[in-house]
Image (tube, rainbow, N blue to C red):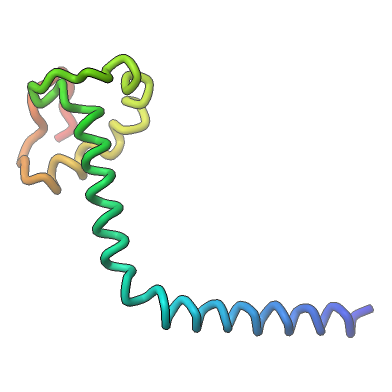
Length: 95
């Protein structure tokens, strides 16, 4: 029974190594572009969620209202990345 377990353990180890080589060869050159696109999409999403704090009427405020408790944790990092030294005046402070 242990020979079988050792065999499958070796197979898993080799497959893991093959996966790491594949990711290194094919995914590594695009990793920074994928991360940059992710940050851009997240910034747009947070802008839609907090647009009323910036003075822009939010047409989807009703739908984004229940997301605010989840997004509030990311708000400080977001407004610093956008270049705002302090949080916009909108009812709460994060800094």
